[in-house]
Image (cartoon, rainbow, N blue to C red; front, side, top):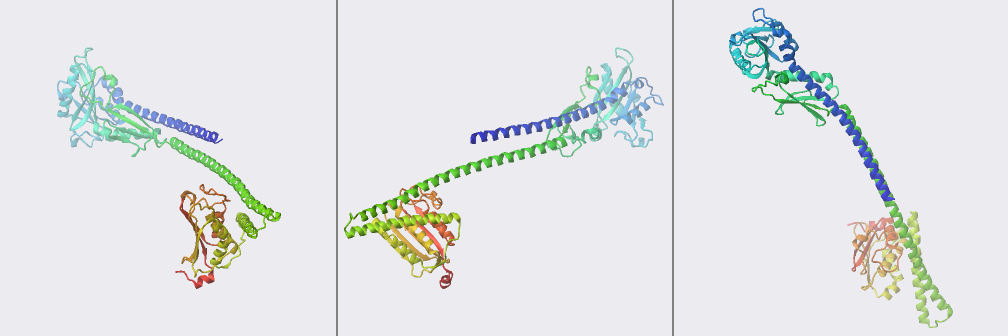
Length: 553
């Protein structure tokens, strides 16, 4: 049954744990899917927007046919692009790459490039048209190299005015063999600006579209792991989705046949954390609560089973002790009765005519009757202890009188056993407050134990003295078998006898002694050593009036 209960609890706990973990895992997978969708959405928004100027502006019909004579045809195209896309810092165009002076720039009026002179600022129109010989020379030299190779798109990164910029340009040719340049139209992207403004703003826009509302934290890190943009300052560890994208403001497929060698293509990473998702938080909290409840239920069941097993074992042990007690008491009762009856029959039959022998038989009858009386008194005391009834009659008692009376009752047994008996009761021992019958029974049990468990060296010492704490210490010492250390606390329990006890006994003596001492307001102490003897000390309170005559020291 125990094995079945343990296996059942284990199986129930295991299946409960697995079910809860599967529930938590399914919730985690659902949240991870939300994070994947948010990551895909952010990457798609980034890549589409970063390629939009090349696809919708550079390749538009309006940018294919233009003149650079005032009023410029491309000024409206640039103004529209500036309004729709934040990352182009300037557009440029030229119909002839032979001279840098033919290159015209269309810059933002509200955000001029670093290389633009201050007097060009303040223009109310969103586009400012200007020229810059140094910047034009740098661009024309690079554009001419791509034109010589017949490339349709020129993409490279260049330092313009001390700032790293990506340049994306469309080269237009007069012939299908791409030998004569008809014009160039392109735009410039300020890389530090897009890192500090463009990516954070676009990330927040995507987050407002649904990422933040669902508890998702969006962030972008560069190729070295440094943060670029984030919707949460602190990302809690949890399910996270990652996507990479190239940091280029053109479509890599359009320039794949003619790749540029001086365009660094760093791979940045989009990260979406779902640690703060309410679905995941609810799943984790619910799973944890369920696991705690299941663990408590399993622990309660296990504790209940353990307590039940202990109770069953204690009941079995008690039943065994009671059975042994009944058998022992039956034997203890039959032995003196049989002896008394045998000696009585002998005396009645007249077979013993010698007066000395008759006296000896009479003494044996008295001795066995006292033994029987003590056993009956112990059984009555056991009954009284079990009922916990206050059956004591307290009065002032001289402890020396109790000791003398007890020694006299056992004088024949002590003499027959060859005991070296010593009684040491101080003459100034005060009266104690006690029940005479109970104290006599207590001392009888102590002396009987000393006689019963003495084998080779037979000595008995009884002492009584005031210990200076308002108590009288009564000590009974023998040189018998002794009690092992692990049994000293057990032998004061009912029905328990030491494993070294070989002679008869009911297992009630020390239990009754301890209870009588406690009922009198005293205590019991046992010191013992195997094969060296046992010393039992019982302390009984001094009678109040006598205590005033013998104050505590």
